[in-house]
Image (cartoon, rainbow, N blue to C red; front, side, top):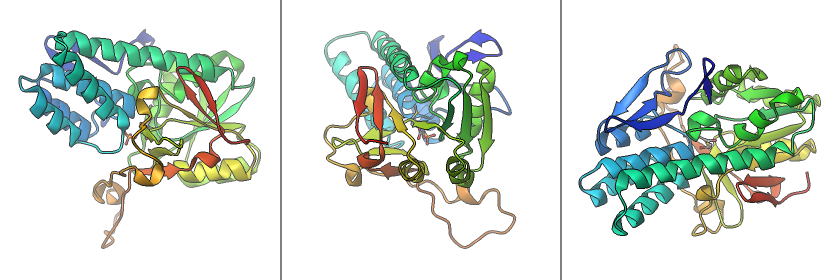
Length: 313
Ligand code: MRU
């Protein structure tokens, strides 16, 4: 990804530490968070220094690699965030490689390189779905920040840069990951406008959105998708208005042990995240971090191995 014109990744291993662009501070401040051990990595995942399914998997891989007691580290890191399948996929991968006698840091490096390659491939397949002059809507941040490089939903968009495209960026309350997407698009010189989450239907109905691409946190065996809260309503709007709705995700996000979306555990975060902008404090708030989009609303899932065709819109 480009940051002030220079290629960089959202996390990397250096001087025996995991270094992460602090996504809690972006875009207002560009700061690097240094994780020296598995406890720092667990903190970084839980507090969303690093976020986005593939990126938290990559951070977890280094967390396991840095730990003396790998099993304990696996347990600690597993208990940070429940929904993103990549986290558990990465932990299983690391424990297996270590058991096979591989050097742990090299195994984590290899895991990250594979994720980056998968995201690039997603971009190559997904770019073909984007017509010239397309106006694309995306939700949350499924960019390089969320995947170490390229992105999932943003990877095809990056590759379609020369097609005179425009991106509608959902703000994504309550944590405003849309700002991270806006920042990434600005770094790449791609035209966009950020909109309040409840404005998406207005622009879709006016015919100003040609297609929607989002990422995923976990995909069930029947292709129901868990992704950032607010994704489901965008998918229903897409079907109603007959525009394509694509999900972009590497195969590490697919959980074959889960039959359908109802079985996916949805993280509920602190009500403070909802209320922190209020000047008067209501008694109660609810803050589910993800929702389920049933497969029937999804036109296709863009993976590193090609596109899984689902619905007809
Ligand atoms: O709570 P977050 O910010 O970690 O949620 C991220 C998302 O919902 C992304 O859309 C998803 O992880 C895909 S990222 C490539």
